[in-house]
Length: 325
Image 1: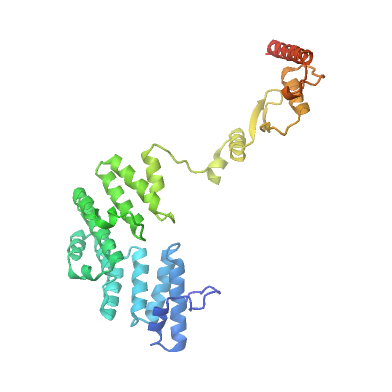
Image 2: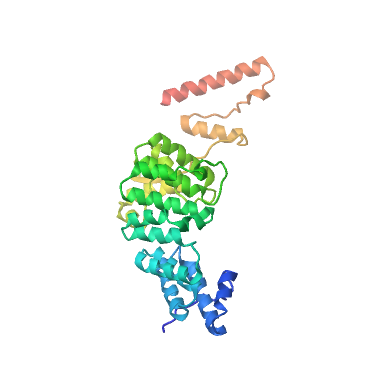
């Protein structure tokens, strides 16, 4: 059997203690190898589900009689949309353990296989009553999805209306439930209500597991523009590329007619700590006026004569500036 490389930091002890307990039925060396492959499945299933699936298949060939391995193989297949295979593995795990906790994901596999009516039938089975609160909410989400698959938007909305949705208490499932409700409302043309529930989703989605903020922004007319790729940048002309680089860096550019090219212009804001000499030097450069006498700031003027002199210099400066313009 071909093995896949295991990350150096993986020992196999990272897996859930209950799973390790199940693996005690295997010879020690085999148990360690299976556990390390299961760790790789968990590590990769979100970022690289295909690779996670490959590790799951190895674990399955090594220990197909272990329920935890069948379950892991089912989730890896589910993540790669191999719904028929995932359903078979989940059914095997359920037979081995007698647990109903996989019932919602099994129903969702039926949806993936294009059989929403079977998913709805499963939502009405006695197994649902044996689920914990999280499992029951998950089953409600699957049932609502099945209704939408069948074009029954009103029924999907009603299915999601539940005490868990109305509760002000934030639970692990709250964000997903509110998001599904907002999405169903939007699909049914109820935009104002959808906006309200996307906003409520954001309040409960502390870890950003949904894209509710983006959906709400879209409803409010905000457009998101992707950053320019390297390929797009290469396609630009030299002048356009310089302008784009300046935009990205925050440095302004101006066109120098004498040199027939763009040049960088480093502009910065003047704050209270800039000295008066710098202010006057910039004013002189802009107006082409020699300003040699220091213009005192307002709080340093002590008598009326000094105020009059300052006003006269100021008027002369403004007049010459307008003449130049």
